[in-house]
Length: 375
Ligand SMILES: Nc1ncnc2c1ncn2[C@@H]1O[C@H](COP(=O)(O)OP(=O)(O)OP(=O)(O)O)[C@@H](O)[C@H]1O
Ligand SMILES: N[C@@H](CCO)C(=O)O
Image (cartoon, rainbow, N blue to C red; front, side, top):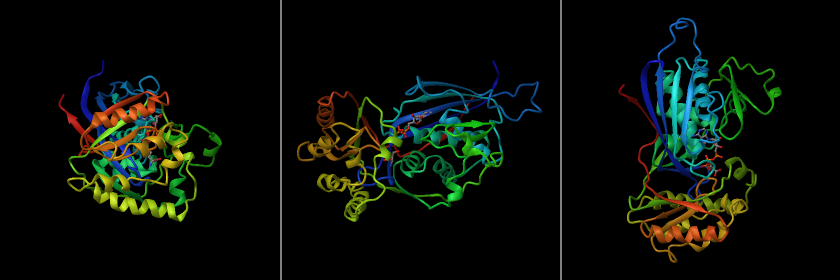
């Protein structure tokens, strides 16, 4: 057994994105977490002076959601390959010390609760800690946004609370860099450099020994107010919808009236959710959407019926209802009557032969944190 020289704990909250009309804009952190317990192990005496890459000596173990499917290979796992990418961007190729990382994940995958965003944020924090990079939170955001290009989940998971964000438009040379891992496709890392699994030919002529420079200030965000009375009920169907699939059903162009519909509601919603006491009728109407939910109903049986039949009038206590992220989870925002509201949605899914898991979650103020743990 190698001696443990340092311990760090990383905690990242789950997140619900879009909140109705705020497609790729709004994110809200909720009290369900991904944690990493990282042990730094003593360098082996034999090669302490020569070796610099301890990726192969780094081990992962994993409990919780995804324990049966997630790769424990540091070069394959989304958390560790994101960390390796951040290190490579700072000319550190591979983990500079052997690590043992225990991952405990409570965030179900492919359900619209930001599991991939949390994994990416955890990976960026891991790279920052292991490489002693001392990056600011704003700079950490740049790296997360290179890996997950829609900012809603990752910005909320990193910063915490109810957050609106947008991306600076990037040059094609930045977005096409082949050494950037992507949270929504299969990739691998060879010798500290990242390649896509799918087509090795894509990498020909691309110099992967030189890390790309990550542009500064990719993401911009603002934390919004949240009325303390409003809690989040998540009604999570027991099937997955990959974000990539849920994005593939969306159109490439929209009619002006649909865009205006969403913009009007989004502007009202960002303030309405901060007002105390909340106005259910205003919020419910402001959470309507014509940009993503109508197209995703083909992937989620019962979605249209649930969104139109559970209202503040039929279910007092409800203030708003929407698809959480890319789905299939339904996010019901409510001040009281949580059981009645969640039962109605559970029943509607059961009528489609779909079982669900219900949670009443708090909105977390704090985003991702990395803390030293006393030995
Ligand atoms: N803890 C984790 N460790 C490693 N990989 C993870 C982890 N969590 C998620 N992933 C990866 O992310 C994928 C799920 O990402 P996807 O974007 O499809 O769903 P989601 O993030 O849960 O949903 P949404 O983005 O709508 O909130 C998983 O299949 C897995 O590849
Ligand atoms: N805004 C994203 C969130 C999912 O990650 C979407 O709806 O596709």
